[in-house]
Length: 160
Image 1 (cartoon, one colour):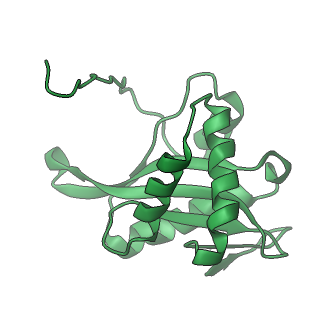
Image 2 (image 1 turned 180 degrees about the vertical axis):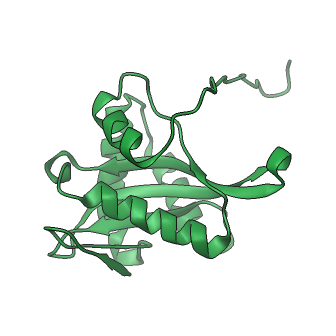
Protein backbone atom coordinates (compact mmCIF):
# COMPACT_ATOMS: atom_id res chain seq x y z
CA UNK A 1 0.00 0.00 0.00
CA UNK A 2 1.27 3.44 -0.85
CA UNK A 3 0.01 6.47 1.06
CA UNK A 4 -0.68 9.68 -0.80
CA UNK A 5 -1.23 12.96 0.99
CA UNK A 6 -2.99 16.19 0.32
CA UNK A 7 -5.82 17.66 2.34
CA UNK A 8 -7.29 14.15 2.57
CA UNK A 9 -5.21 11.04 2.94
CA UNK A 10 -5.61 8.10 0.58
CA UNK A 11 -3.88 4.77 0.24
CA UNK A 12 -3.54 2.95 -3.06
CA UNK A 13 -2.79 -0.71 -3.59
CA UNK A 14 -3.99 -3.93 -5.14
CA UNK A 15 -7.24 -5.46 -3.91
CA UNK A 16 -7.24 -8.34 -1.48
CA UNK A 17 -9.80 -11.13 -1.07
CA UNK A 18 -11.67 -9.01 1.49
CA UNK A 19 -12.26 -6.34 -1.20
CA UNK A 20 -14.21 -8.55 -3.60
CA UNK A 21 -17.72 -7.31 -2.71
CA UNK A 22 -16.72 -3.64 -2.66
CA UNK A 23 -14.77 -3.99 -5.93
CA UNK A 24 -17.92 -5.45 -7.52
CA UNK A 25 -19.93 -2.43 -6.37
CA UNK A 26 -17.37 0.00 -7.76
CA UNK A 27 -17.03 -1.86 -11.05
CA UNK A 28 -20.81 -1.99 -11.44
CA UNK A 29 -20.80 1.78 -10.89
CA UNK A 30 -18.26 2.12 -13.69
CA UNK A 31 -20.34 -0.08 -16.03
CA UNK A 32 -23.49 1.85 -15.16
CA UNK A 33 -21.75 5.14 -15.95
CA UNK A 34 -20.97 3.89 -19.45
CA UNK A 35 -24.40 2.21 -19.72
CA UNK A 36 -22.75 -1.16 -20.31
CA UNK A 37 -24.56 -4.20 -18.97
CA UNK A 38 -22.31 -6.45 -16.93
CA UNK A 39 -23.20 -9.95 -15.74
CA UNK A 40 -22.07 -11.75 -12.61
CA UNK A 41 -20.09 -14.09 -14.89
CA UNK A 42 -18.22 -11.12 -16.40
CA UNK A 43 -17.49 -9.69 -12.95
CA UNK A 44 -16.19 -13.07 -11.79
CA UNK A 45 -13.94 -13.32 -14.85
CA UNK A 46 -12.45 -9.86 -14.38
CA UNK A 47 -11.94 -10.50 -10.65
CA UNK A 48 -10.13 -13.75 -11.52
CA UNK A 49 -7.86 -11.81 -13.89
CA UNK A 50 -6.94 -9.05 -11.44
CA UNK A 51 -6.27 -11.49 -8.61
CA UNK A 52 -4.21 -13.93 -10.70
CA UNK A 53 -0.51 -13.06 -10.25
CA UNK A 54 0.24 -14.47 -13.72
CA UNK A 55 -2.41 -12.45 -15.60
CA UNK A 56 -1.50 -9.16 -17.31
CA UNK A 57 -4.57 -7.24 -16.09
CA UNK A 58 -4.00 -5.73 -12.65
CA UNK A 59 -6.00 -3.46 -10.38
CA UNK A 60 -5.51 -0.70 -7.87
CA UNK A 61 -8.02 0.40 -5.27
CA UNK A 62 -7.90 3.83 -3.67
CA UNK A 63 -9.00 3.87 -0.05
CA UNK A 64 -10.14 6.84 1.98
CA UNK A 65 -8.87 7.68 5.48
CA UNK A 66 -11.16 5.00 6.98
CA UNK A 67 -9.71 2.32 4.68
CA UNK A 68 -12.86 2.01 2.57
CA UNK A 69 -12.27 1.58 -1.18
CA UNK A 70 -13.72 4.55 -3.07
CA UNK A 71 -12.27 3.99 -6.53
CA UNK A 72 -10.49 1.59 -8.85
CA UNK A 73 -8.16 1.41 -11.78
CA UNK A 74 -7.54 -1.58 -14.06
CA UNK A 75 -4.33 -1.51 -16.07
CA UNK A 76 -2.03 -3.72 -18.12
CA UNK A 77 1.10 -3.49 -20.23
CA UNK A 78 0.92 -2.92 -23.95
CA UNK A 79 3.67 -3.09 -26.53
CA UNK A 80 4.67 -0.14 -28.72
CA UNK A 81 6.69 -1.68 -31.58
CA UNK A 82 7.36 1.62 -33.37
CA UNK A 83 8.90 2.99 -30.18
CA UNK A 84 10.45 -0.36 -29.24
CA UNK A 85 8.94 0.18 -25.81
CA UNK A 86 6.37 -1.13 -23.38
CA UNK A 87 3.77 1.19 -21.92
CA UNK A 88 0.81 0.88 -19.61
CA UNK A 89 -2.81 0.89 -20.73
CA UNK A 90 -5.41 2.15 -18.27
CA UNK A 91 -8.54 0.17 -19.14
CA UNK A 92 -10.95 1.29 -16.42
CA UNK A 93 -10.91 4.20 -13.97
CA UNK A 94 -13.73 4.93 -11.57
CA UNK A 95 -14.14 6.95 -8.40
CA UNK A 96 -17.50 6.87 -6.66
CA UNK A 97 -19.41 10.14 -7.03
CA UNK A 98 -19.11 11.18 -3.35
CA UNK A 99 -15.31 10.88 -3.53
CA UNK A 100 -14.84 12.90 -6.73
CA UNK A 101 -12.93 16.12 -6.27
CA UNK A 102 -11.31 14.88 -3.04
CA UNK A 103 -7.95 13.81 -4.48
CA UNK A 104 -8.84 10.12 -4.81
CA UNK A 105 -8.26 10.10 -8.57
CA UNK A 106 -4.96 11.94 -8.08
CA UNK A 107 -3.87 9.17 -5.72
CA UNK A 108 -4.79 6.56 -8.35
CA UNK A 109 -2.79 8.41 -11.01
CA UNK A 110 0.17 8.69 -8.60
CA UNK A 111 -0.06 4.94 -7.99
CA UNK A 112 -0.12 4.25 -11.72
CA UNK A 113 2.91 6.51 -12.28
CA UNK A 114 4.80 4.62 -9.59
CA UNK A 115 3.99 1.28 -11.22
CA UNK A 116 4.98 2.63 -14.65
CA UNK A 117 8.35 3.78 -13.30
CA UNK A 118 8.95 0.44 -11.56
CA UNK A 119 8.17 -1.48 -14.74
CA UNK A 120 10.03 0.84 -17.10
CA UNK A 121 6.90 1.81 -19.03
CA UNK A 122 7.34 4.76 -21.37
CA UNK A 123 3.82 6.15 -20.75
CA UNK A 124 0.32 5.31 -19.64
CA UNK A 125 -2.44 5.58 -22.24
CA UNK A 126 -6.21 5.44 -21.99
CA UNK A 127 -9.36 6.33 -23.88
CA UNK A 128 -12.53 7.98 -22.65
CA UNK A 129 -15.88 9.00 -24.04
CA UNK A 130 -15.95 12.31 -25.87
CA UNK A 131 -18.77 13.54 -23.62
CA UNK A 132 -17.04 12.57 -20.35
CA UNK A 133 -16.38 16.26 -19.68
CA UNK A 134 -15.64 16.20 -15.95
CA UNK A 135 -13.10 13.40 -16.29
CA UNK A 136 -11.57 14.98 -19.37
CA UNK A 137 -10.98 18.16 -17.37
CA UNK A 138 -8.79 16.12 -15.00
CA UNK A 139 -7.15 14.17 -17.82
CA UNK A 140 -6.15 17.43 -19.50
CA UNK A 141 -4.26 18.30 -16.28
CA UNK A 142 -2.32 15.04 -16.01
CA UNK A 143 -1.85 13.86 -19.60
CA UNK A 144 -1.52 14.99 -23.18
CA UNK A 145 -4.47 14.47 -25.50
CA UNK A 146 -3.45 12.64 -28.66
CA UNK A 147 -4.61 12.97 -32.24
CA UNK A 148 -5.53 9.29 -32.55
CA UNK A 149 -9.01 8.09 -33.43
CA UNK A 150 -10.11 4.72 -32.06
CA UNK A 151 -11.80 2.05 -34.20
CA UNK A 152 -13.42 -1.23 -33.15
CA UNK A 153 -13.63 -4.04 -35.70
CA UNK A 154 -16.16 -6.69 -34.66
CA UNK A 155 -15.00 -10.27 -34.92
CA UNK A 156 -17.78 -12.81 -35.25
CA UNK A 157 -17.04 -16.36 -34.10
CA UNK A 158 -16.15 -18.59 -37.05
CA UNK A 159 -17.05 -16.02 -39.69
CA UNK A 160 -15.67 -13.01 -41.51
